[in-house]
Length: 185
Image 1 (cartoon, rainbow, N blue to C red):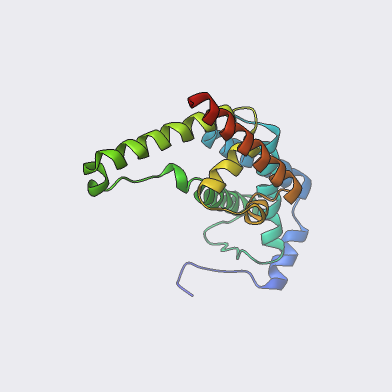
Image 2: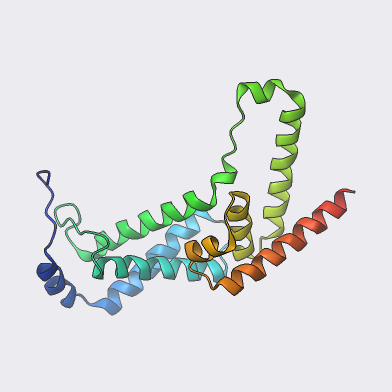
C-alpha cells in the first residue's frame, strides 16, 4: 500500500456504514447522479432518470459488497466516496456506449475520397438517427451500443435494463433505420 492510502477493514467498514443516514445519503446521491447525467445528455427522459438512480444504487451496493474499496484518506466521508463511485460508473457507461461517436479518420482514409465521403455520409446518417430518438433515450442508447458492436444481452447487462425492453428498443431502432433508408430512396 502506498503512503496516503488507508483502506478500511471489513469490520471497520461495517461499523461506519451502520452509522450512515442512508435515507439522506441515498436521496443526495440519486440527485447527484441525475445532475451528472444531465451534464452529458441534453435530453432527460424517464429512462435516463432510471439509469441515474441505478448508478447511485450500484455505487452503494459496490461499497457494501466491498467491490469498491474506500480509501478514507482520499474520501473522508461516505458521501464523497459514493460521488466518486457514481462518477466512475457514469464514465464507464458512456465510454461503452459512445465509442461509435469517436470515429477517427486516418490520413490514408481522408486521401481516398470515396472512403471519406462514405464515412461522412455514415456520420450524417448516424446523427439523423440519433436525433430521431430525442424522445426515446433507451432506443438512442441501444442504437449507440449496437453501432459499437454490442449484442442485446450485453446491452441489457450494461444498461441494467430488462432484456425484453432492450429487444423492444432494438425493434424501434430497426424500424427507424428502415424509415430513414426509405426516405433517402
